[in-house]
Image 1 (cartoon, rainbow over the protein chains, first blue to last red):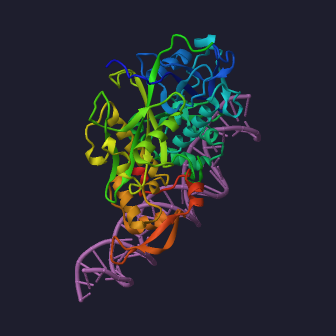
Image 2 (image 1 turned 120 degrees about the horizontal axis):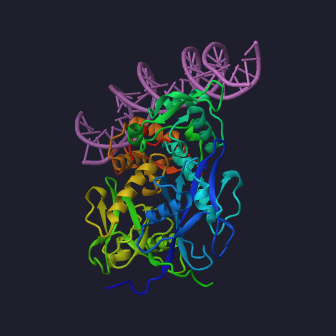
Image 3 (image 1 turned 30 degrees about the vertical axis):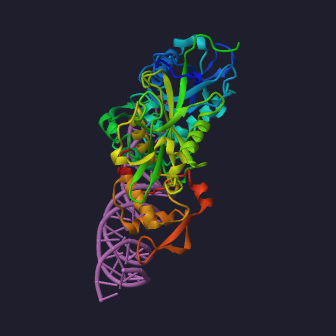
Length: 235
Length: 235
DNA sequence: TCAAAAGTGTTGAAAATACACCCATGG
DNA sequence: CCATGGGTGTATTTTCAACACTTTTGA
């Protein structure tokens, strides 16, 4: 036997929702689609899965193409298989979401795609079912970040607690008491205080912290209560 | 434009991990595969996605075929796309997990597949990458059930608190103090006490409960602490 | 009458929340 | 010297965990 007989075959795509944080807003990176259909419209970064690569490999390849970056946080989100989702021909698409340090991203890597960062509050109309993908990704990041320390992936190696708090407040569109936030985050044992301060945000300066990678890996899968009142949150 | 040119096309499958609870053990339903390759080997219930159906529709169709049941809890788990996972030809498979009331399942519906329930402690060798699918499904059910009331899907409409506790103990392979368990579960407001008792398990009998469907839908997505010490669990 | 499972309450510890003042510094 | 953001402590409330005895009833 060489192939399954009489089975339908579909093109297989991956689409990536790339998150970044600019200090004020959680954003995603969109491109202007370079081929028909819907050429010129805003779109997620995506592409077809090739014959010899896995879905994870395909999404990494596509992310490298757009951002020039390797090894970022990347997680499979969901597979979208509505028969009519792509008007050209039936295509199953597996959505991934990625978290990157927005400062590492170099726009010039991929000027041909005309990529732009969009705040999640103002996402333009997207092609196909990509709006649903973005909404699901946003729900997932909020869900996961309440329990696991994934948001550090959006910050540089060294960051300050006020920066981190601003990120959490942005993701959950809320405000958090800074005394309690600081206690909660430090209680995880994930942070190592540095000697230096970031003097950019204030005259006094805020101490830099770095991740304690050992604790990070050890505790990543456990439930950490990283935001206040998680039981009241509806995801 | 009619089709994308030069893109590879793959067969698309779905595989279902069907969970049931027999009062003592969490089990999954396996079949003896009816076609080559690996004919006669134990396998998940799966099949190819047809040209005009979505992935969700395909998994529902396949579950109906095997169990005779409709409308059970069904959730997309993960999509497996290693190029070599199926030796016949490249096939992308989206795994789903389903939770059913094992008593509603009628074996005679599908004698042609020779289905059998296997305790998760003793899963036979499975074809392709299905062992990985089962392990991921088990992690997922443990993860999700710690926060959301999904395990009720494994019980009949009316159930007793000792039955429910036994289910949680089985899923987490642990023992729970019955006073604390009872308090915790009743505090969710999800249960309505019935007048009748189940006399099967003891002379005294245990009161039946039913789900309060309004609270169930309202609170399903919130974080409920359904098991003790969730912060210590590693998923 | 007794074995076997059901059912229930309290107490101490730990965690979470609410809340306000001092510090450091560049301009 | 003062405006701005950084940093910290305590009291209260709530939640969680540990723990043991009584009830029911069929055999």
